[in-house]
Length: 101
Length: 201
Image 1: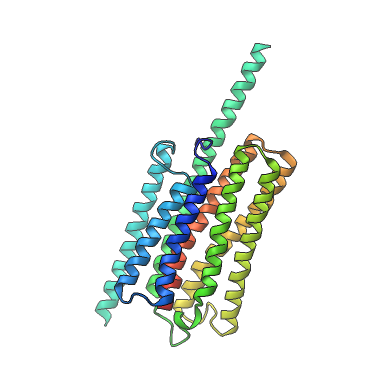
Image 2: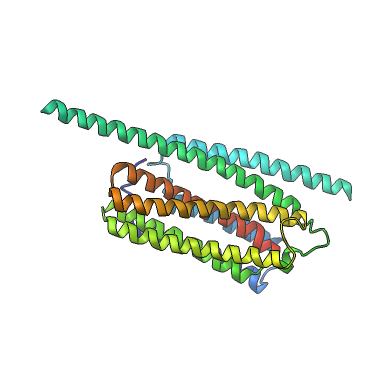
């Protein structure tokens, strides 16, 4: 991996500020009770996904140019694996729960 | 003369290549670790409502405490970044300083987490109380254990930078430790979004 080029202070600070904002939004919503119902979960989920991407880009310096293809490929593979296993487990367990009611 | 110069060039090239493949290997390890955490998250979500008539997440979680832990961990990610920047500009002293700050922030996080666990267990909400608490302690405890190992890693790297200086292998280890540390912060995003925030609603 070539890290020398993109490791600058501004990158880390941008990432940090974005991460703070993306953390503050869901905490403020829950703390203040500003939203209720499923909308809160949607906002929390979206903020979390964006923040993960922010961390990957600004702290772990991933992009499509300098990051080796194998690393991106493995990240994608792990993401697919996680989706299948987590999604599948939750699907099965929720379905089971529903049928046991 | 030129033969030995060529030789040392070759050795350095080989060393770089071997360090690069170690970095890829470490990345593979991180991804498998991500799969472990994902499955712990899945079991937590499945078990989170099974409090067995004991204390629920609403009774136990304190959002202020979680916000403090989040702030410590996020700040420590930034300070590790600053250590990496100091490394690229060859300032060994700065690297040690920022690593030390990162270590303090990491230990602060661990102390807050221990305090939280201790308080819960003292209230009779230990891991054996219910399915919800077993899953909670397994997930958050595994993350805490990772942070503890990361803190040990930082201690080791502070020693290596001071004793060996910023040699090629030391730089590579620092970069790998950085990957690990930033990865733990990513897992924590999942923990507050899946465990704590929905838990107090």
